[in-house]
Image (cartoon, rainbow, N blue to C red; front, top):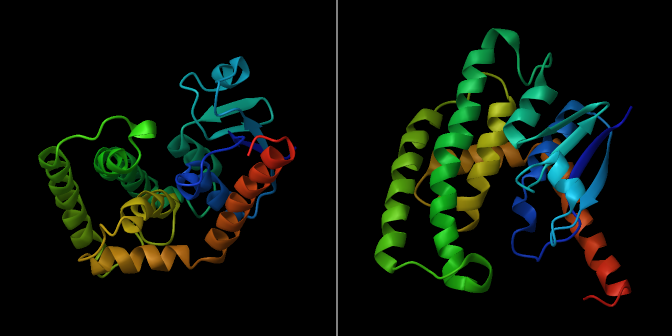
Length: 224
């Protein structure tokens, strides 16, 4: 049975390349697993979406009778028994997966949401004061500086390439897009190394093609 990846039916342009189903697409391409895509409305939230994901977020996967949400849990599930979550390094890989999602991403999202609120308050709410945004950036830089030291001199986070690298690089792509990795050469090189992988390129092409098809469907329906 082909695995199903569930994402939004459409989004405005600015967040598209960073939607978290990209993490799952990348993982599936690394494993060479076939999958199909289903969608849920971004607005209004549907009862079917809430039944699968109580917070009405994406991604969600369906694999036979199993429905699973949260990108970290999905990466672990798909990685089980593969070289991307190897038994001898399972604890270390899991440690860095959690670090990506619980330490680095928390700081990234806090800061970048403030930055985006300055540009698009209609989507992100009123912008905080410059002082608050600067404080959030200092907190992010503290985390990035520590990660820079941990990454320096190592190709991947826990030995060979793993789900920890997929998660960490997907998190780092956000501050990288905002210029926040300038001054962190090891992190920049790490992100470039990972995103040069053929599986990432294929996943990103399919990911963006999904949104382009959604634009075309809206235009055909007179919604553009």
